View 1: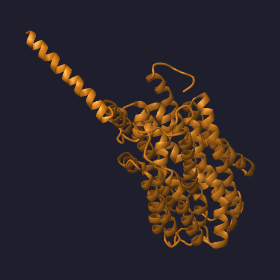
View 2: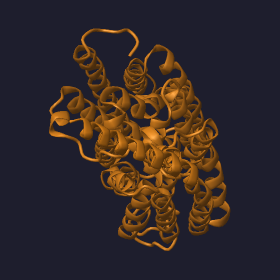
View 3: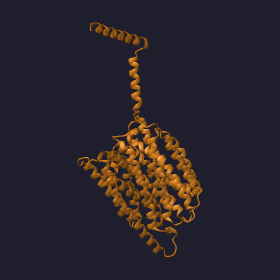
View 4: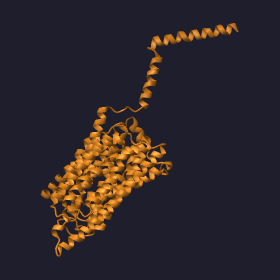
Length: 471
């Protein structure tokens, strides 16, 4: 037993001497191993973005929505031109339902394209290429629309191609940005989405000038080329996904347990109804100004610019307000009050009330669009943001596809107010009654959407174990 003990001691002594020798000869393998382990751990944890990068990402998002939603929001100018006697599209004159379908395909795919874009974002670590490809396809669709002479061609170019490209351009920034913020998430997303209003404010008068001076074909070509040139630096801001953003983009499918939740079902229904209702004033504001109120087309474009400018400022204001009084609270009030504004100010309106509608609807309608991404994160968690966001925006795309075309069917084929012949008073009276029916349709959609998001607010409080005034 003694010899064994002695032998063990010799072995331990030899090991100790060998360890010291290795440390002296190799500069300390233990320290080297520790540093290697630390480097491996650092490589597994994605680096968190700096404050500078957060600001750069918000600015890129602002400019991206300036493009995408700004162009979507001025489709009323296309609608007015394509349905007017000056149209270059065969069979489009007076056909509001058919022409509005071009715009709703484009804007609907901008949102519903999330169903295939978000899985791409989750699959690829570097999403810059997705965004850049989208800007290119979107721009090609706009340029090709300048060569169209029939409606079906517009459906393929300004509708389908534009919509697919705009969705690929839109969602890489929109899907990742909320995960970079916590306390100021509402304000950050408000600034990003304010770009849509500024885009409409700038693009509405600029496109009207291009249209009147150069014609529709060159106006579209310039718009498409400008869109891609500016899309290159915006897409270049995107880098590898950082920290929480990487986990936010990781899950791309909605689980069955999530689908069965009452909040998810009602939020999806609310998204469908709000998107359908929100598109109607955007598309028919200009035509109503010209057809019923007998404004000139330049004044109609100015009213559209005012609406989008107010909407832009309101999105920032709604985001700041929501961070203080609750994001769900702010969103519920904005949707319900926008529906009330349609009934109170658009229905059977004269010029004064319609101007009030342009301003107040611009203020109120921005709340839902600005706050939807932040409320998705609050309700379902950052880890489920990508999958839920993709599905909700897919539903919103479906809503956008039916809202304006159904309003166009209610309106029917008609001539513009300044060009109506025959019994003008009778024709104008019939036309105004049709627009009143459109306003009723729109108001019902928005109030129903408001009821859905209000019920989501109540269900979320119940699921979290109690009512909180700020939510």
